[in-house]
Length: 366
Image (cartoon, rainbow, N blue to C red; front, side, top):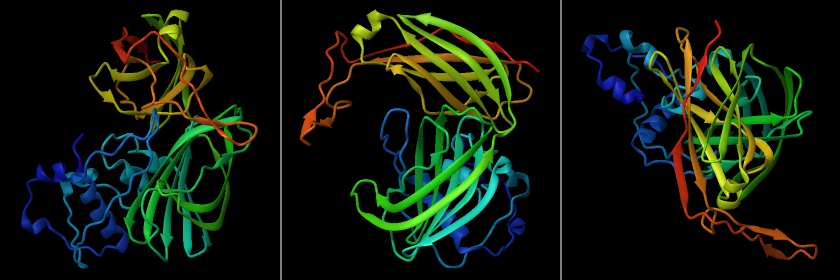
């Protein structure tokens, strides 16, 4: 997918089509941050199945900004105020419709010179996505972290957090949380923030920000599938697919034979999904749960389904991995408070092995 600047390069316009518009400081900051991101280096990956926030450094622009209107391409220009799409930077399309179906919250708390506002939130029945903005009376630095929200009644949860610096005093963020063990179609969220921290330095600014709110699940249509493929001692089963107005969610699980468990530390699965019209869908993994690294239940959210599609073709891409000191390990604390290195179990495999499984074709119910 082209980014906004590539799209504008393709536009043939007349000088008389330019129209001056008044813009806010936030809008000017958004243009600066998006421009910087378009030429920045690739973001570092911080862990398996989880992306951690990276900050955008703002470059200087003049205080006067001219807005341009392009009638034929207006739909391609990011919507000001749509934090979902802004943080996605028009790259995947996954968040194109999230703003439309989210609930506008506008909940604000001030503490220690920092104002945090919950802007929008949406619950797709599997994962809650929360956008927020931070305004401070000082530069908070970069790579911020504020802790995770709690979901009432959940037995556990997983997710990701992404905070982007707009300028010295403004930030925006997106948190995704996948709770486990819920049976209700409504979730109750409590987010108690006692500090704003820098991820790498550990520096903290203490405060007291508390948010409590509830969200109903977006209407969805569930299609049970229960289709499996097997290869090299691994079984991948697609349990069901949930379709919402803004996305679809694939629920799947994996099982490995004892031979695989004896040879490899991890069996990692990525799903490639396309439809019978040739569309390829971008997606993001949600949290997973299971008894061990070989027996897991996962879900992954993909962008909005083409309404004319009649089939989904799901292709599992598998990587068997060996863990070593560069990608695993750690320490634990003994009863007397001393650190003890966690030993990596010995396996017979070497490095990693990659392979592609057969397609799973799902006939879509209309």
